[in-house]
Structures are given as C-alpha cells and as structure tokens.
Image (cartoon, rainbow, N blue to C red):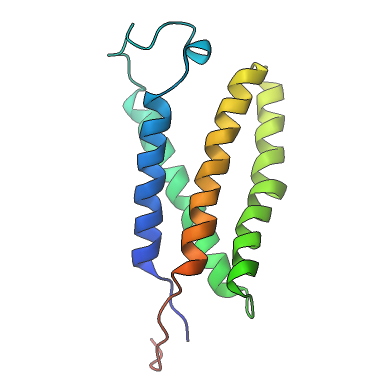
Length: 138
C-alpha cells in the first residue's frame, strides 16, 4: 500500500512559494508600468497572499493524490500526468478568465509562465520522490 509522501509535498510547496516570491520580486518594469524601486513597499494584500498559498497547496495536494491513485504509472508517466493536468485544465481555464477580465497579453504571458514553472517543479519532484511502501494497513 502506498501513502502520499508528505515530505515531498512540503518540499515542492516550499519551492513553489520560494519561486513565487522571487517571481513577484523580479517583475520586469514593463509589467509593473513603473520602475521596480518605486512603490516597493506596495505589496499584495494579505488576503491575496493567503488565497495564493491555499490555491497552490490545494492544486499540489490534488496532483499528488491523483498520482498516488492512478495505478501502474511509471515516473515519466506521472511527470506527463502533471504536465497534462496543467495543459488541459489550468491553461484553458486561465485563458478564458484572462479573456473575460480583458488582461493584456503581456500580463497573461507573465502569469502563465509562472504557472508553467510552478507545474514543472511539481512534475519533476513528485515522481522522483516516491512514497515509501507500507505492509501495514491504516
């Protein structure tokens, strides 16, 4: 019986948050509409940060759970499962929302590129760090 590897999930979550902070901190001037050093104290509100953390963790937990439930997948199969989840669920959903909210193309590409890196971190680490087997049932 396989269990979800909580250490791997937490490591992936840590790296995703770290990349998110670095991604936000290094936003190019063309996306901000101002130089980076102007209004540097203007951070996202706490509710936006909490929503970002919760949504990132829920997506990660769901993907880790799905990788565990789908039987007989190799590591490369799990990698492609995570990539296809992003390509077939996240990408179309984000494109529809960005069209509805009338986001500029640069903003959409910037957010999608972070989302792709976010997914790549998950798709690389989770399949490589397999959960341990247990001979005892819970």
